Amino acid sequence: MKVQAYVSFYGRCEEALEFYRTAIGAEVTALLRWKDHPDETMTTPPGYAEKIMNAVFRIGNTELMADDGMGETRAEFKGMTLAIEVSDDAEAQRVFAALAEGGTVIMPLMKTFWTSSFGMLTDKFSVPWMVNVAIPHA
Image 1 (cartoon, rainbow, N blue to C red):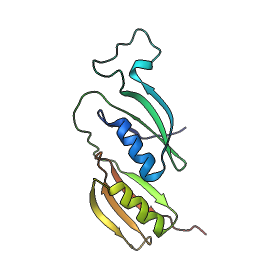
Image 2 (cartoon, one colour):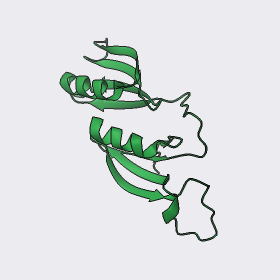
Image 3 (tube, one colour):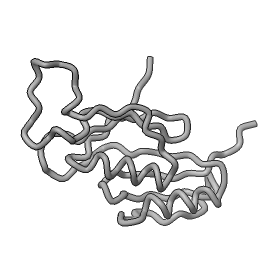
Image 4 (cartoon, one colour):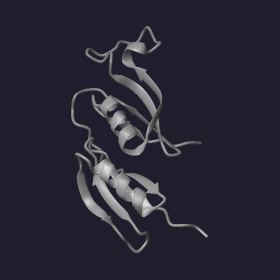
């Protein structure tokens, strides 16, 4: 069994994938545009030929899925947050700053009782993130 987050970017999926590739090293492992789907009985929504019907991308060893969604409304992510765990404070600083570019910092990166660096932000695509330095396990 496997659980993956599926993120709809409402027309900005390609931009988001490029942002995550540049900012935190995401790798797109699969991408299907509406114009390329194999089902001849399916109708492509008007203006969606070049939009992304489905994409799979990897951040570290985690796979996420994404698409352009349907419609032009702003993406809203309520009741969920993507948590990214990094190995040290320098990596936390780099990842936090990259994801925060054009977004909103909710809680600045800081030392907490459970780790040396933790922070929360919403990126420019409205996706909420927590950045946390992993605690070494004995």
